[in-house]
Image 1: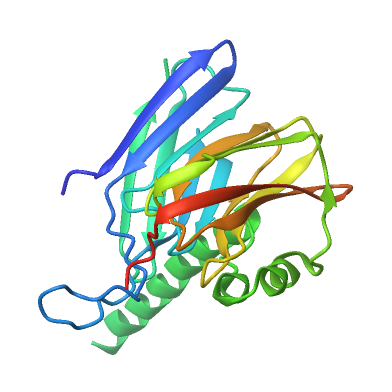
Image 2: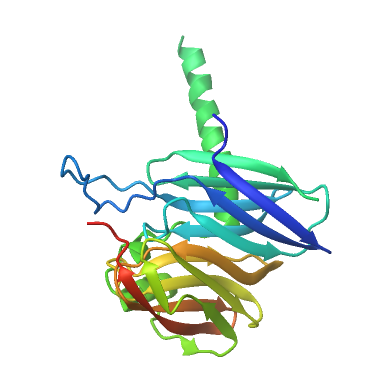
Length: 104
Length: 150
């Protein structure tokens, strides 16, 4: 399956500005199905990691209070064109998704 | 039969170890107790061992004055504090106040943005952990339509 993570990286010298958007329902577990009235079980990303050339540049721990289709941006230094940035998330049901982007 | 089963078992143990080691090295585990806490101070204590953070003007917390849709509230945090280890966002009135926590390795700049859900009008606090303690900045965000479902 194609990855549902979109990553854009802008290099300013050795600083990489990372913007990422992923598709995920981020269900809180307290929302009710409007038709059935049954509670929709919690389903949310718990941990997101960004690795640049295998080295951790950011770990994000999420709760259900992160909006549906989460967006994150951050910057890290020590980046150069040709580096490979890997993004991976895991959710509370053990599902994962990942994508790799080459900088520059 | 037995041999292949043994090889398979050994293989899976080795794989599990390979997977576990880098995770342990990279960052702390997902703080389940802090995320389950129903009060902001409890979440802080679970995460940091204390609920006391020093208000700091070196932290800039950007969030809307009024969020029309509580399901999508853009929040960004930036700080000039040095040696930042983590940045967490706490929404006081949410059923589970700890919304998100960024673990920041050396080399990563202490500036980040995300979008969170807010159930009702609340103080939003950014808690920045550095090697010299806990610092915070707060802002009230008015929510017109809550975004926690239900």
